[in-house]
Length: 261
Image 1 (tube, rainbow, N blue to C red):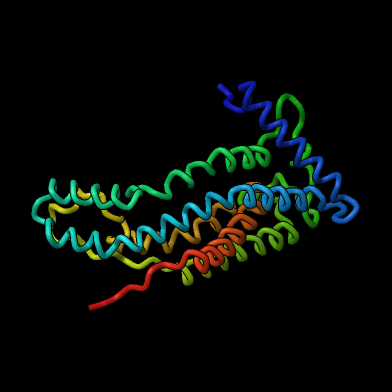
Image 2: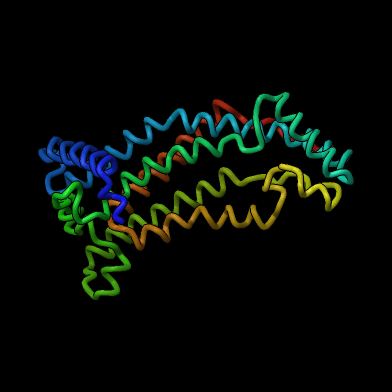
């Protein structure tokens, strides 16, 4: 069954498609042949602006986790040999602070439907029964519906294709490196005993997790090589916005200073 053919989803996609193409028409006098690409950028900015409350929620959750880290470490020190007691005390701490170990996860999940709709606009040949004209639009002569991997494999990659995709992929990788350096996560103290692992403590206590988070900053650059150009453009704008937003929100909601004994 084609999920995108389901009437409610098809209608939602058709509405988003109409908005995108309407923006392209408005931008054509300024952007010319790249008006659809400019519309993708503008639409992405509008979506990210609408998700600002999600970013604020994540920033607050990050600050709360950092603030509770010393208290969690103390609970692990006291009750590390009693996993059940540690579990109760940990949950009581979160309850007293008005939060949960999973604070910040729900906001990220709320973005999934938005990302899914926008991504579908860039990959579907037809939307609600009519051709997807977006895929025929270009950016510097490169079709928005083409992908770098597909162009290379089929042998149709031209210098313009390599230049446009190369610029976008390198830009995404640069943003990823900046994000990794600016927001390098700090590990929390490990549990005092092996049994303490059953408590809902932060996964950042694991050095392997920290290394994986660092590598994930560059996963978007790899993905951009395989998705349509319009989707790669969306990813670039998204990661750049996210970095700028996190820098700003970190100033508004700074993490507590880490005190060492």
